[in-house]
Length: 223
Ligand SMILES: [Zn+2]
Image: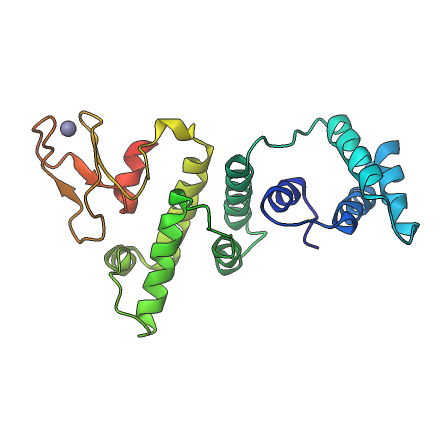
């Protein structure tokens, strides 16, 4: 069921339209999983009404959230990152296969330009290029050839989950579509669609410390 868990429900609440029945379904799932809060039972009972009152459902939903010690994320990006990192955790613990998890991540509406998603678009472009449908620059091809597809993807998942949990204001603007110096912290917004992974930093003069953050190994420096 789509709305089985709270993080996913919050992501959908902020990013897409949720119907009243999605909330009621969530409450029913909580009941089935053994939750004995009276507010959850009350909310689940709306399922018996032909046209549940949306405001009443919302009222009970917020009460349940409070009683369960959960909190509604304040903004879309926070809720989206929670959802991304939960999806990564599910891939790592095996409750989702890598393919299922990637499909979920790539299904995210990106009309808000979430730069952090870039590694998944790069992986997606690699698959497109592999199928001969496109000759776009394959930023991940060399690493996959070296590490193997599964190992590379697992590293990407682990790293992405960690990046999602960071204070995003600590990351460079447009990260990882940016060059970032690991010696002096300067950012450079030259094109990152290149085979070049590191360069001399014009700000501090250090050799090869200006890293192209499109590459997995370079993003590790931010963790
Ligand atoms: Zn520098």
